[in-house]
Amino acid sequence: MTEMHPIGLSIRNAVKVYPGTRALKGVDFDIRMGAVNVLVGENGAGKSTMMKIIAGVEEITSGEISVDGQPVRFRSKEDAVKAGVGIVFQELNLFPEMTIAENVFMGREPLRYGFDINADHVKMETRRLLQRLEHDVDPDMPLGHLRIGQQQIVEIAKALAQDAKILILDEPTSALSAQEVEVLFRVIDDLKAQGVGIVYISHRLEELIRVGDYITVLRDGEITGARSMDGVDIDWIVKAMIGDKSKDFSSSISHELGEDVFRAESISLAKPGGGYVVDDVSLHVRAGEVLGLYGLMGAGRTEFLECIMAQHPESKGVFFVDNKELTTNSVAGRIEKGIALVPEDRKRDGLVQIMSIRENLTLSSVGRLARNFHLAPIAEAKKALEFITRLTIKVASQENPVSSLSGGNQQKVVIGKALMTEPKLLLMDEPSRGIDIGAKAEIYRTIRKLAAEGIGILFVTSDIEEVMALADRIHVMADGKITGEFGHEATATQIIAAATPMKQEEKVA
Image (cartoon, rainbow, N blue to C red):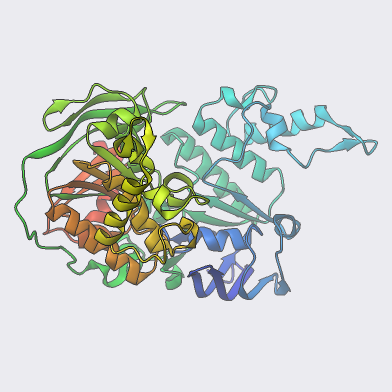
């Protein structure tokens, strides 16, 4: 089989270092031509980093890349395109106000006489590519008129227009219907027959087995499995993905749980192009309980938290705090009713980097600290010091900019800001993302301590070890739905299996 599929691109001993973390740790990876090279791993395993390096979006820190046996260095996306690499990112990179044809040939428009765009040729080629993808739509139609699945087809057409020798598909079926998935698989078979090397990344494990010829598994920036797809099953993939994470990480409950502090009933959030991001989700959290919501990228977990915080007023369903229905539809109103959120992106959504530690801590509580419509500086400083002490935030001075703190201490500031609103329910989106092991352990201790104080905690994570270490109960989300509910008896394999999206017909079966 390997003789039929020569190596087109090879990576050896690849290392990628970001400030504070090594995303890749000496990775070897081969892309075989005329074959589908499956790449799989948990969120944060290093898949996207490696694909960005191959596509020229990120530059490798150390290691070697060769194309057709010749060493290369990709310093830009243009370098990778010249070497025949095309990529379809999971997040669409399109312009909704422009036409389909303009999007497909953006930045590569063919010219007449060296200065005039050949619009007729652009439209003709776009129509040909769309027909190849079994989507016979008008190339002059504004892209924004298409639903999300059709826009993803346009993104694939855009990559095909570059005549790529190596095509990277990152979660290509995440927004496609079952019929569109079949079309994509037929196109993949056609490209394989033409000798194109395809890298296929997906969380849908049954898809990988169906479409893949070779498989590489990443875990924590290292390769844990690389082989032909012959004989590979879902159990093998899961074991390579999680390794010894399958051991029991459950935490014993060291305090009594109270009554339901929060309840969500039949929460739904529609997608702009059809279907649901959050699909009829119901759950409850008790006082003093830590409920983990585990799922992979695109499962709808973050959007569910945003619905709780009234960030999607168009969502459907009912929320209750202390058995009283929430009727307020503003973020401030939800905070007032006892709900606080620690967002996933603390730097963008949780902190104001140019402001001091004190100002960031009290940002959501200035109304509580005001005296006669004026902020009381002494009271504010005293309150900030109280939470710095309570959460053991390591600071030289609370007047220093929050940007001067380490990632773990910045996360504690975000938690402190939320706690200062005196919440009954604390929502946490990926609470330990981007912090080191020591800081992560401190965050875990903080979460358990807050639960012991009687706060209900609902946290979202894509880290299987984290959800098993922290949660008293575990709910799993996939494709916008709750697909599993587990207690301490659950294994990592069961949780990951529940988080793996399936086609609709398989669910029915």
